[in-house]
Length: 197
Image (cartoon, rainbow, N blue to C red; front, side):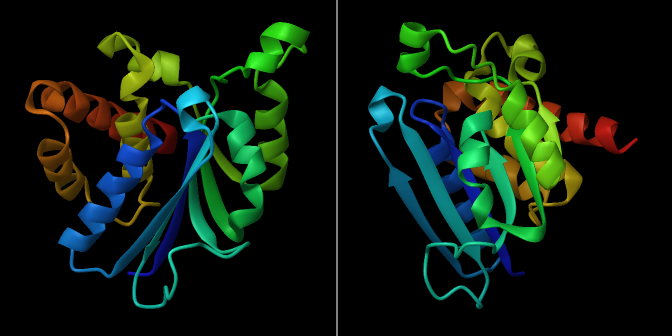
């Protein structure tokens, strides 16, 4: 399998764990994997971008512009910011719920993510997921990082089967949170199946 996956969001959303789950699952399936994170002021809600390159054709960890098969975006503005990485027939799976920057509370610009989502829909294949609705049953959007992996898995865009990712969740997530994370992942899979129906 050859696949370039970019995961983007802001600090505190769990993007790094999501990228590690993808990379380790791909390795368990016998693939060569390169990955790298770009973390800018992540502790303060800054941009976080993870590059995951799967397959023998990847010679460096960073995805060149116009080459990503999939962008998993935890925040609408981050999806737009990283759109130049997407290949012509690639797909963006994006959270519709924005993380408002500190400047928004000072300026009240009205940023709610809707313009970003509208723009993405005109530029590429775009699957929009409302993190609050999808994760409501779990009591927190903190589980969206594994739920979005479920969405990507269910659509077949990730190229990794659900069983392998569920095993990685069991391995990498603390035991007391494993069951709820696996449930969030499966909720994402079910969401994608509803979208395809």
